[in-house]
Amino acid sequence: MTVMIPAWIDGTLTPVEKLEAHVKGLRHKAISVFVMRGDHVLIQQRALSKYHTPGLWANTCCTHPAWGEDSAACAARRLDEELGITGLTLTHRDRIEYRADVGGGLIEHEVVEVYLAQAPARLPLAPNPDEVMATRWVSLSDLRREITTTPALFTPWLRIYLAEHAAAIFGEALAT
Image 1 (tube, helix red, strand yellow):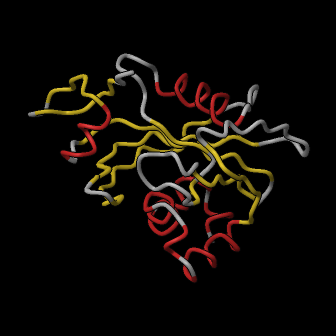
Image 2 (spheres, one colour; image 1 turned 135 degrees about the vertical axis):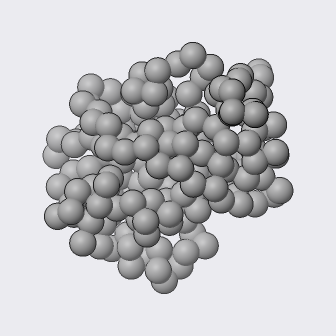
C-alpha cells in the first residue's frame, strides 16, 4: 500500500509517497505525541520491522498525517493504532521543524505538530507488534540521563526534542 504524505515541493504542499519523502529528504508534515503520567513519559521501542530506526526508543508515538488528514485526528488515530490508547485529551504544544539522518540513506525533514496528553494512573496498553516491540514509563530526568549516556539507543528526533524543545513540549517545571 502506497502511503501519501504532505510534503513541500518548491514551496507548495503536495502529496508525496512516504518513502520518497525520506529518500529525498523532503520537508514534510508529521505528528509526535507524548503521553505523561506526572513527570513520567511513556516511550516505545520501535518494532524491528520498521523501515528506519528499528529497535530504537522513541516518544509515545509519531507518524505522518495522510494527505488531507487533520493533525490532531492523526495523533489520536496513531495512539490507538500503535498502542491501543483511546480517550485521552490531546493538547497541542508546539510546531517543531528538524532535519536528521535516520540511517540507511534516509532523512527526516519534518514539520512536527507536537501533542501532549495526561494519562490516568492505570492506562491500558495494547501495543501493535508491527509498530512497537516494548513500552515503558520513564521520568524525564532519567530519560535525559539515558540519552546522554547511550544516545545510540534513541531516535534522532527524541534526542532533538529533549535537547532543544523540552520547555515548549513539557513546560518549564518538567523541562528542568
